[in-house]
Length: 276
Image 1: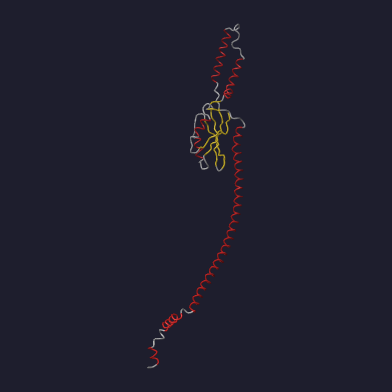
Image 2: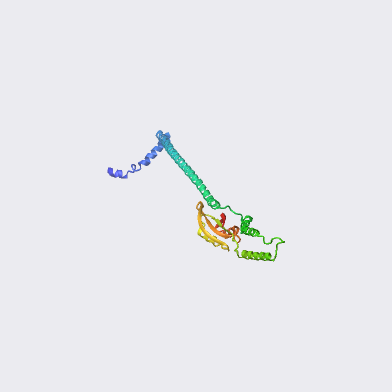
C-alpha cells in the first residue's frame, strides 16, 4: 500500500478539532480548569469593565457640553425677550399718549358746535310746542302797546260832557279798531333747532340714517342742511338743522319720532335752539 493510499484512508487529521477537544477535556478532568482559561475570562471581564467606563465618560462629557450649549442658548433667548419687552413697553406708552390726545380733541370738537350755536341766544325753555310764559309775554307785548296807545284817547269822556255825537264817534272808532285787529295776521312763532343724531357704531349706514331722520314729516316742520361730525374711534354723528313752528312741533316730538329708528339711531340731542 502506498503512502497516498494510506493517507486517503486515515481520518485522524480531518477529525483533529474533535480529538483536541477530547484531549482538553481529559486534562481538565484530571487537573481541573487550566489557568489560561481563567485568565482569559478575567481579561474579558476587565475589558468589558474598561469599555463600560469609557462609554460612561463619553456620555458625561457629551451631556456636559450639550448642557453648556443649552444654557448659552437660553441666556441669549432671555436677553432677546427682554429687548422685545422693552420695545413693546415703548410702543404701548406711545399709544397711550396718542389716545389721550385724541380724547382731548374729541372733547373739544363735541363742545365747540354747541357753544358756538348757543352763544348768540341762550336756550329758551320749550315744552310740547308751547312757548314759555316769558315768550308769551314777548309775543303779546306789541298788542299791549297798541292797546296802551288807544287808551290815550279818551273815548268815553266824562258823564257830564258825553252826548250823542261823542257816543257815535266812540262806537265808530271801536268798530274800526276791531276790524283792523281782525285783518292783522297772527304772529307765528318759529324756532331754529340743531339736532345731534348719534349712531350705534362706526358700521352704521349714515346715509340711511339721514334718510330715516328726514322721513319724519309734520305740519310746521322744515328740514335744512346736515353734515357728519367726527366723534371718535371712526364714529361720526349726524348734525342736522330744521325750522319748526312752535305751536305745532316740539323738540320732544322730534326726539320721539327719530329714536323710533332704533336700528340706526342711538340717541338724539338738541345741540342748539334759537328763536326766529
